[in-house]
Image (cartoon, rainbow, N blue to C red; front, top):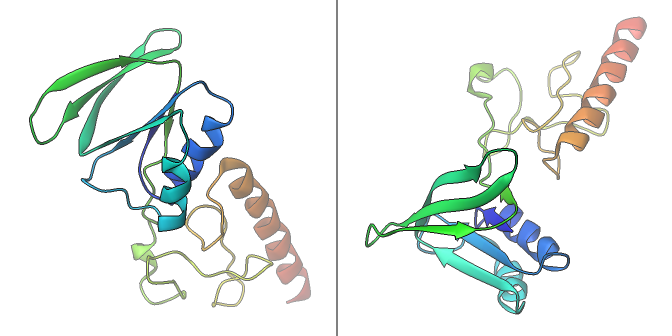
Length: 160
């Protein structure tokens, strides 16, 4: 298995995968991992994990299913191919919220701040998914927060 990304999400995924896969390789674009020190310490303690830093993923190969990954060592330019059975892309995200301007409160990285009912700082406006400051950025979480935001908006409309 491969994990692309050396931030917290990538390293957490690699640690999880190491418990079920025979081997996990982490591919990090930068010269150093960006994950928290405690996660890196745990990762490096696992015997079935390899970390490749300062590499650029060039191609994920396969037809019906993934069968490998091609990557380049950024310093030397050497290109390599590794056979594997799965790839998890965990390279992070940037919330696409600049269009909001100053209308809704956002945190330092642009995520919309919401309460436990998905309400934003602007009354009657609700937000959901990865653009919010929710703790987990997963499809199932986004779907649930979307349902919560819709219910909260409905409740707001019938009361106002």
